[in-house]
Length: 463
Length: 166
Image: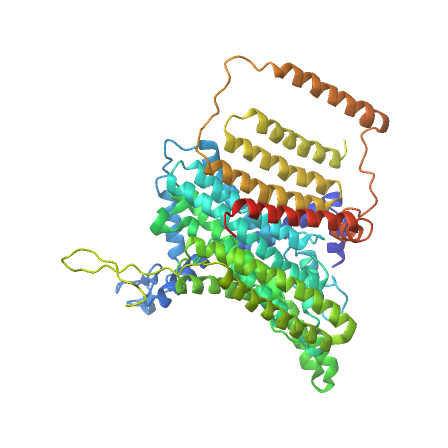
């Protein structure tokens, strides 16, 4: 570790270049896994979607059947299956060799920059994301060897950085939509800009809840906060944000916003294929299309990582405080100590597993839910998620203050009180909305009567 | 020249290019994109000055939200391509050059000449989120609250304007 410290402080053999070299290594350690895993993700998405839709999916590519005259006797007539894992490579080769058609009337400069602009935020998003535990078990914070390699930049503005970069993600889509000189693309771009602005706010509110509870915007500090005792008094279990009442609400809001931010189904209105052909990337072919595709998957990957770090305890495999348990149960201290070290060294794997689970959730939703209508999308964002996020923010403040003043029981009491107040407020507001406005009319179904007299309207209430 | 000066000059050059692009380019979308570039680079200049909080806010609010709305509006309006240029040169151009030069001379005479080009003079860590938060909620709590009320009034007003029937 000494040479790493020397490298970091610029006193090693590389001198002043040491920190820069270390920085580049950190960036590579973050970006290369994403780049290598994206093809695997595409395969996983296609297989999983197929299974959920009662199909088989791409399972043939890469299957080798050895002929009967094969030199090695043991392999004659045998089949080697790879479950279609080579399909992404075939897809990649296809994308490379497709004709790269550029429509005549595009705004060329913007048209060619748009894919790059789309890819940049997807990769830059994880700049403050720790992919491993920074603390060696039984030692002080920042003592582990992983602390030298992750996150790329451990800056004070951690969460804000994620929000800022994700808000830049819209430019790729909007510029592609504009530059294509195509009505459908333009509409896709417009939809994307409205959608991302709307969901950005609710996402910020949900993250702000966790920031307020943990008292820091650094993501490693948020992870460290989640390694504390659950609700402040259950000693053996970690306080993952998703286990706390306010954190659960924030997590639900965050997940919905995260899907909307990555333009995935059911929020894929910018590329709704049955309305807008392919939306913003209609006019893109070959590798330029592939870049958009890769940006989407990379963004899914990194957003899953943000969710894992902020709500799912970061690089901890299981929500148990092994160090605490080893001192609480001396009889099994050796086991728990071992598990603590295993938890530390397997941290990156655990983090990757959480990201994989997040992506599987993305795919699951895509296979399950139909696309939202545009007004439903806006209503969900502005009228449900944002008020919920703000209310949750106030509740977190109450929780923190009451826990500090009266202990955990005070926290739960404040939660109960807040719930009652919110419930009364909600029911009264809904009642007021019902009486004051003739308001939201229910949409009746216009049914066509196939009689010779022609089409008549049928009252939907009498059918 | 030190590394930080080189960094500043590179960023400042980009920012000036972006700012010049905003006024010189005819195409409204490209002009707006130049403004995005300017805001983005400005955020980085704040980073180099040791003020990460204001830098990231700059990127998030201006580059990430306000400019998206600008682009949204520009794209919603009819696409006009390049704006029509006036036939004869604008007579106000000369006045603009004179006033611009006057501003430059004033800035040089009052700021740069007496103080010299130096590194930022702020206290260490003056721009971290902690420092900003503490000063917002201690010394500047009154302006902060007033501004938040102002924003609330703005929100309510915009809803009043936008919705015909509430």
